[in-house]
Length: 333
Image (cartoon, rainbow, N blue to C red; front, side, top):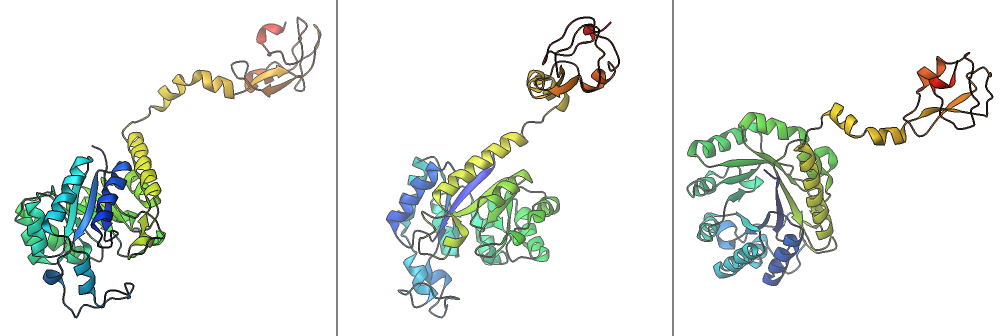
């Protein structure tokens, strides 16, 4: 089964419905499997007391104002989901409130994504569990004790589960990717694992696939010059296409084992072309004594190798031989 690649739009649309639709077309062109948004309903998840950690939006006094600006109506979400389906993408969105879960359930999303900040939000998780839909769970900021509780809750209920290794740093440094956690999660929880990457590069995702990741999630933006909270940790559309191509290339290789002996046999002609044979270094007359200076190893192969040529040193030529002729055992008395 192919690696499942999710293009995370998040808030990159900055509250513009037109931009949200444009992102769907752009990531479809990159040939990802799914496009993912975040469903924020301001009054259900925030208050006027929620402040920005770093204030980047001059038009928004509080985070509540920002979440309000990120809202779409049910019909608008429905149109986005239909658009995704029309261009061959699965439509996903992370809910940040029970009302958001209810909205997405009405859209009949194929699965629910739970963000790193809600790993222990059991009220929200139980609401998602009740949908019986598959769950994609990010593990950023969570200890194994916390994950044990949440994973146990989900699997006991019978929902299908996939886990993402995720480091909640924006952008994420190479030292903090946590490739080792992929195997740890798979061993501990016996479920599909993936990488939710915030490095802003294509490299961690490709490496993760080589290490066994079955899902990849990356933030995506039109340009790294765009204004927004996730720009530095996102891929632009050219990079997203490179990532998809790279993952597909790597997974094809992983799916095909190589028999080293068979591969060598199949490339015998190529090996002959690139290897070397013993050739005469000068014109030599019949009766001359063959010495170590009489031959050199040059391309192509297919003739006498060096060990056999050395065994002829001291022997006498029975015929004239010319510079750059192959050395052959039949040349000697």
